[in-house]
Image (cartoon, rainbow, N blue to C red; front, top):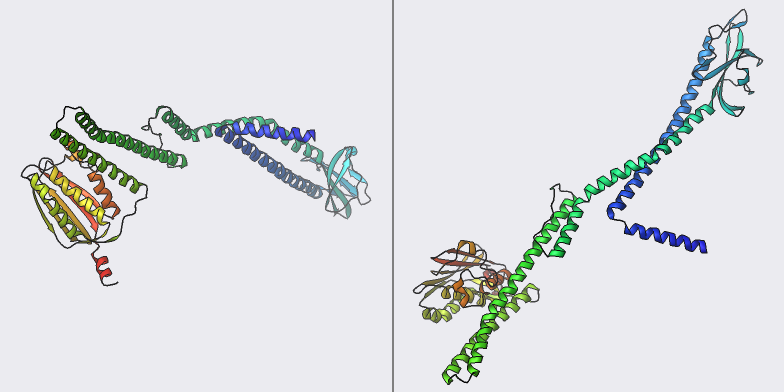
Length: 474
């Protein structure tokens, strides 16, 4: 029981030690282990193959030598002639016997003879003085004289030669292990270099919050290169997200600071005791105006937030878009007159499928902006038309225009292309227009010449066919 507990504790300690090793160290150890295992398997295979091949070669050598001796043997007057015979060749000792089993030649190496029956063309083994021998006998007749030729080759010497191979392998094994470990370490170090760079970059970002750092990639296209590219893409998106969030927080603070400051100053003035009734009325009117502006900002922010979180589901119903635009222009004609701007509209028949309330807000934002940022005596022209399976709304003005470098940014929240635009509005109008067009499967684009005017075009899917089908009950 105690031994079992100690064994379990030992295994637990080894497992814990393995977990504390770095991935690079574990990969190097596994690489070294499998390399040594592969070398051991190769050595076993080579040893086994060498044994079989050498055994076959030894048998063939024994048989060839005996056959040569049979051919060399000759008799004269019934006596064996040994002058031209070689009784030791290629490690094979040759003995010649008569038919009675008596030794005819040679007269030396008598101690090597093995007491074993002579059997024609048969390979067998025998022992002599602690050595193993392989024997091969052949019976032949020449000039009326029968004789036996026996060949003997030592298997002990052969076994000793092969037995040195394992000793040689184990002697070289430490060198193999060292080379495999060094090679595995260098390969692993190079392969895990991008992983180390990823870890260092992540640590640098974590310590300094610098999302602009990127992982260097070699462009090889392998798994680690793709991992580095994926991480860089993720860092780029995180950076853009954090910057957008930081900018958004700053913009919200800036947009709310002004109405809050106005409300506070007007309240302090009204409560100071120095304000007359008319002044107090003006102060309350200013407080109401700024409160409405704050409410508009918060309401639009909540709507956009719900939309981004997937909690807002727009209505899907047929809308007479041309008539809707006409009503909005009629409502805003008075506001245009107050700003000394001429408002005209051409709204043909156009049907879309969507949320009427959101569509009203989209058109109202575009037309209101065109009036607000126009010049005195300027013009605003609103046109709706159907073309190529889409409904187009174009709002064109002769206002102050937008600089080319600002065109891509005007749909961002709270972005204002000109400082003069910061005195009115919520700064969310165009971002709201883009979002409403998007959720209706459409898009919005802006064209502008700075100092001349701008044109905003909204493209929506044509809902006329869907509406016609519904009216006919299709």
